[in-house]
Length: 102
Image (cartoon, rainbow, N blue to C red; front, side, top):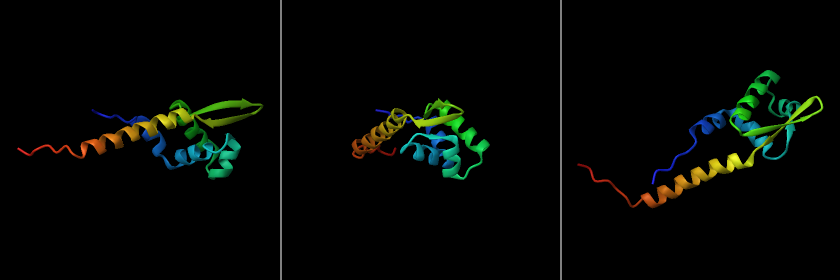
């Protein structure tokens, strides 16, 4: 059984600032202003990272007056976690399999 992991999503989450944003959004829905305060990133830099996260389906937006709030999509994170759990389970069962050298 071959287990695949979403490499595009891993690339998106591998960036330290994007991972920090995801970690913050795991605890509450925040607007861009909050995220700038929490991360210390510049507004333009943060907006670019939020766009990448939005396009990858990791976050969704919620307009609120002149602000845009961001919230994490837990199903996407859970799906990735499930892929890693499947990979770990495959490794457990494959521990007995050893291909002979020829």
